Length: 124
Image (tube, rainbow, N blue to C red; front, side):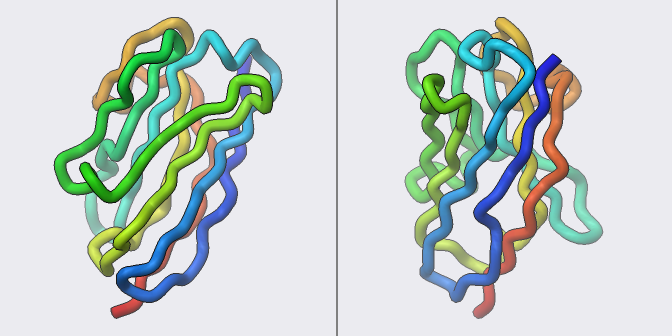
């Protein structure tokens, strides 16, 4: 059973950058595929990015492709989401999620473990 804790959110101006971290504990994190999702006020949760436990290229939502990068450091049991060129439409609560031994999926229902979320606010 893995527990996830996100950090790194905050307030940033449009065009700025933030790096989110997701620290995992309680399991062999190297065997978990990690996903990032976000939920803006009044909107449904949406997929942002995912990185497989077996390596390979991460996958991204079209809305963040070229601006966001996800990576992982299994030695530190941590996944990162580097967010560049932020715009107000990126304002949301960002969640880290994990699924054991699974491939990268944009469907949040297949992820069994979730963090509490971290708020990202981008001002114009």
